[in-house]
Image (cartoon, rainbow, N blue to C red; front, side):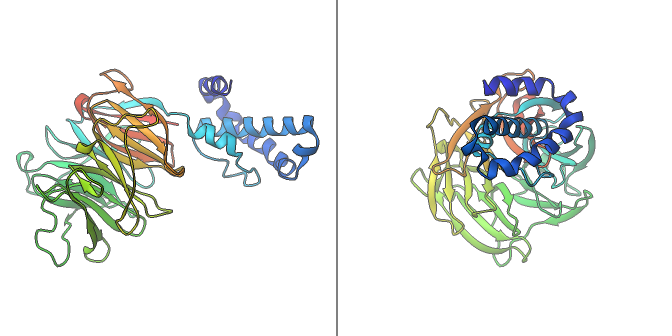
Length: 369
């Protein structure tokens, strides 16, 4: 019944946008009653309160993908919050003319989307939120044959970090697209011989996967402190704490836990802030992992895992112990909302959008909550 209601709400969302403020205003005065125990003593009144608050929360969340932040008196109803968390996003539109994109990232405000090309001009294309091309990023003096951008990450100051397999470097660009030079780790020549996956946390730490033959690992560097090495862990292999072509990374801001897509071992390894393995995600709970590559986390604690071989994105609730599989979206193919060897993924929690680099179809697909 709840799923049917949500489906209906999605269908009439444009009309509901005009009344979302009214719904929130009606829900706010009901919250003290629900919190003050009226539900427990007056069944009929309580049922009305809960139903109204649930509907108000549900309408607003389905439309915007955000909690009722402008009505702080309305408490989150755990059952409703859990149910909404398990709703998959809906396909919205496609960003075209990207030659075999591998990585995708979004700026902090959601106004810029970055997609790395592995064919064609082999550069990073920059789009606005409507999917219009606004810029191209490439190191000055480089040519398409001498560069291969893979993964992209954007820090809180909107600086753009790009791993390049052919240049064996991490290239940095400013918010305006100006080239700032390569990232040079302090005190160690050749510290980044084969960088692949990349992400940053809120402290300014830079996480990089290194796929040097025989030495697959994760490096953690202080991006704002001259590239000082903070820690390094892992080696090539199939056992705990070992990797076989680690790709995407994602960091939880609340715990510091790090998630690494251990691609060729078909699993996600979980490490604490010190680099000690504390768990893994593999094939269980109805979710298969054929070749996991791109990773992203949203503000609700949902981990997005791109499965390149199976042409889909698996989503887990990592705030639960153990992490719970929620849903998958995308199916193999070439049509709208379909994927052909997807690779990177990025989430804009501010708008509820999810961007997926659809490598085999030369495009970036956009979903939204």
